[in-house]
Image (tube, one colour):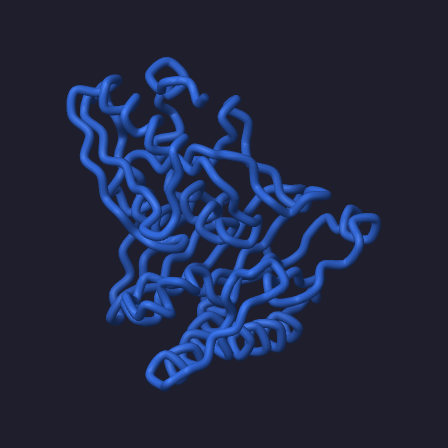
Length: 269
C-alpha cells in the first residue's frame, strides 16, 4: 500500500488544528438538509483534508460527509477511494465534551483497509492498516501498538454505547446482554472513539442499532480490524462500503474477531 500513516496523520493533525480554532471560539451552528448540525469547523476541516489528500499519489476520488456524493453509477466504478468524516461527533463538539474525531479511511473493494482517527481535544491519534494487522495509538510523542483484548472464554463483558444516540431496540438488546453474561460493564463514548476503545483493549463489544453513515465509522473500522477486531452486520457478514445507500445497517463491533460471538450474543429483534 503506497499511503503511509505519517502522511494521513499530518493531514488529520492539520484538520484537527483548524477544528480547535473554532472550538475555542463562539461558533455558529446551522442545520443541514437532513436536519443534522454543521459548524464552520466541519467545513474548514473538510477543505484541509480534501486539499491534503489530493496531493497524495496516486490520486484517488474523495467522498466526504461535507461534499455531495457523485451518482452511484459513477461511484460503483471506484475500486479505491478516500472516505472522510471531517468532524465526527458534531453534537459532542457543540457540547464541548471533547469526544469528537477527524476520520480518514482508504476503502478498497468495499472494505476499510487503512484508517486514521484523530481526537484533537484528547491529543490522541489512532492509525490502522488492516492488511498488515498494524494498529497504533499516538499520544504525546509516544506510539503504542494496539490489540483488542481476547475473550478467552470470559463470561464478563465490557460494552460501549453512544453518548448521544439510543433507542428502545438498543435498550432491549442491552438488557438481553445483561442476561447472557454474568457481568456486563457499560461505558459511554461519543463519535468513532467507541470503536477505538475496542481497538485499545478497553472494551469488548459495541452494538449499534440505529442509523449511521459509512463515513462515520470507516476509519475506525480499519483501526479495529488492524487490532484484531471486526465490524459485522447482525448476520455475521462484514460491513460493506460504497453501497447505493450510504447509510449503514445495524452492526455489532467486536474487539476479538476470533471469538464465536454468534453462539453467545442474543438475537437482535
